[in-house]
Image (cartoon, rainbow, N blue to C red; front, side, top):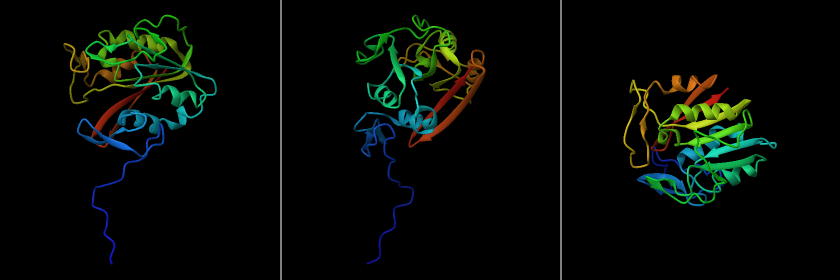
Length: 215
C-alpha cells in the first residue's frame, strides 16, 4: 500500500526550547501557541530559540527580568544555565488592568525607578510586552540603559507598527497597553542605547518585534 504524503503546509510543532515538552496546545485561537508544561507562549520560545547562544552560559552573570510569566519562564531556565537571576514586577497583582498572580517575583519595583540596582550592575535585561504599558517609557529605557553594564544586552519585546509614522498614547487597553508605537520607536530607543537591532519574527500566527539593545 502506498504511503500517504503529508498534507501541504502542515508541519509538526517544534518542542518547547524552555522545558523540552512537545505538548504545544491551542491558545486564544492560535494552534500550538501554549506549552502545556511550562505555559510559555510563542514569544517566550522565540526569544529562547533566537538568543540561545547568549542565554546558554550565564557563568555567574546577573540578569534582571521585568514582568516574568511564571517561575519557570525564565527564572528556572536561566538559573539552570548559571545566571544570577532577579525578577521584578510593578505589584503582586501585575498590571491592574490585566491582573494576575505575580507573588513569585523577587521584588515589587517600578521599571522607571530601579532603586537598589547600581549603575552598570546587570549583564542582561529581559522585558517582554512591558514597555507599552508604561506611560513614561523613555524613562524606562533610561533606567534599563543605566543599570546595563558596558558589554550587556537588553532584550525588549515591544509591539510596534513600522507602517504607522508616529506613536500615540491611549487609555489602557485590554492588556493595560497605554501606547501604540509607530515607526519612530527604534530611533527613540537609540537615544538611550548605542546599538539597537530589531528582530521581527513570525511564529505560527503570532508576530512580534524583539529589540536587542546594547550600550
